[in-house]
Image 1: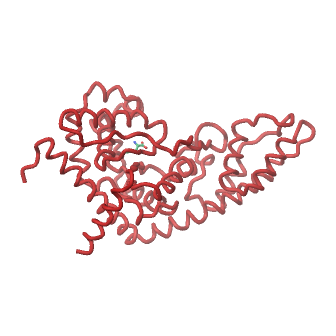
Image 2 (image 1 turned 60 degrees about the vertical axis):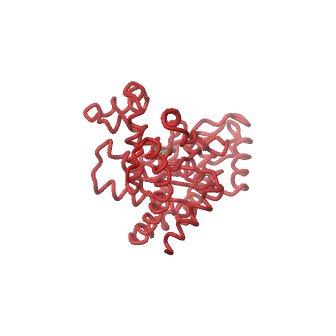
Image 3 (image 1 turned 90 degrees about the vertical axis):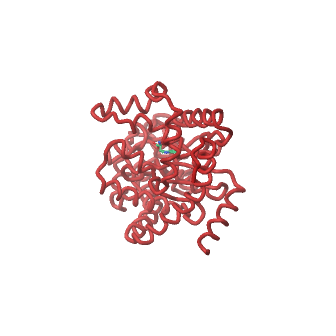
Length: 351
Ligand code: TRP
């Protein structure tokens, strides 16, 4: 069968490469911090590794989101990731709930995870503080589901930020426990980002990381239109300029340079670096107004094509669903191999 032929070919070529996996939470709109902190790395990895990227919609249920909003967010996140350069032919881009094998592995792993260790995780304790009225079992076992996400493909490289270290450590513990009890099935997964520090992008007021939930005017979203991008950049925090040559840049100025380096030409960056370094009190050469105007235009050039590609895809739901189905087929082909081994090891293989 043609379809099986495609899957067999996919699995064969995929088997020769190391497996990378990451999950994307479908909350809110993706912003520049997500792009430069994560997605750009995913795009790079798709050439070097056998990649699985998925939208973690089961995890989202822990906070009881509105069903329709969640569905829309899932489709938007898929569209935005493709618009940023993920090639659904190269990677497996899927939605978690389309791969029921993950849920079964979660069940087995739940038997090996202890209430005490789950209660101790920082993310759980944070959630208990934030939503004391909804401390459900799904919240408690969030790290177990995340471990199942990873282990179902026997992935070893997981591109995530620092905030996910503890969840990864738990995934390693569960994998190790399983291996000891039932036999070596799972390699141990580790965080991976090409040995490079992830680019950290602050909000345009310089206060903390760019984020979905903080002040929307200080975050640049991939869905922002040209005018809004200009407006946000022009409102970014600056000051009267450096008081002596070669000053240390305050965080909010450094952040503008970081953004400039990401979207503008090397010449442009150099010009403003020089202007900054040659400025002193009473002789301020750098004009932050001009720098922001330039940044705004280059930012528009950067975000505009991503936004239009993403919105084209969102308007073509048939295509989007076809892509998601193709991702699920690839993910299930891999997941069912692992689950077959797991069932056999646990003695759950009667039929
Ligand atoms: N917990 C991750 C986050 O908050 C999302 C996630 C779910 C994930 N499953 C995963 C990340 C598996 C890496 C691997 O961002």
